[in-house]
Image 1 (cartoon, rainbow, N blue to C red):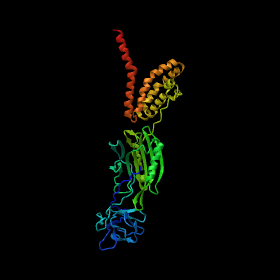
Image 2: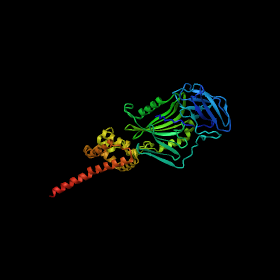
Image 3: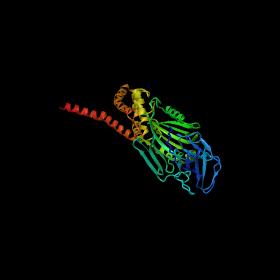
Image 4: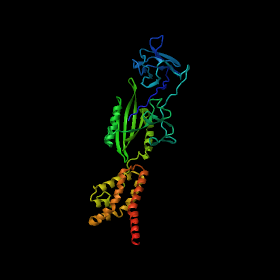
Length: 443
């Protein structure tokens, strides 16, 4: 998903130190509008190859030439670059097509409030940051959308920026001020059934690829896509180059990496990292840490499906582990056997508590199940007795198909409930019946 952050253009300057000091779009006693540049540095600066561009007007760019002296001003006449009722911002580019300065909209003229007469540097030079391992990690939690993650303490965040639930960024790079600011965003959405009728990893991967391609400008490209299954849904990863349009032929190339966490109820969360190539590798570890510590709806979504617990050697059989049920219902393809296997693999084994339960259960179950399964095959009457006995158990377990076992708490809660239900059916109810019969007999 591509999210365009609203851009508020404010004065800034690059290492050249040249700034736009004054703008007069419609002077009363002059034919053309003009711009006055100021060089507060101690050295003259060559303006050859530089350009001034407007976001509106007849001309897209106006080439500059000559030089501007140290501690001096230079007036640039811009022929026909301004048009009434089409007020826009001015962008000053150096000879490497790097943005040096941007102004607010120039409707009635403008004077830079950060520059006064004198030689000084009004705005500090923005240096490329050097990544250092944070001293500590800050914790961010969004209760309204049920997600949380860790981020460096030297990063700030803003919530509800347009369609973005939260945006985090380095303190020295506020993205509302600097268009080339590295940033990580989290967006919550709901995928309509009309767009993806059947949810699957393959369909969701195609959905995101098509969505990104529709929003890429010329020159953008998808680098890689990938989809992984999870017990709670799917994770779709995409990396791409994105050109953000600045207007009138100008664009900014952003290297983007994102992960979309899709749940089976069609809600999904996209975590995306945007950066120019200069800063991409510098802040990539921050994005990876956000993903590593991300929790959504109480689920650690960064973890893959845990491996299935292996059945002890010598205890497996045609039933793939469900020995008694397979012998009772005649085939591992029986609906009851498939249901037990799906509950085990897709629900219990996806949580730590479920894995711990299965490890203990396997040690107990495989101590006697091979003997019972073999005897069932030899004795039809015994097989019928076992079927009658385990049917209430399997019926109670089928209830787990109608609940969400996607967290430690849900597995423990529903698991304990099923155990208590079976204790009631197999022990408490028979005990009550026997007690009532004995009471009736001794009257």
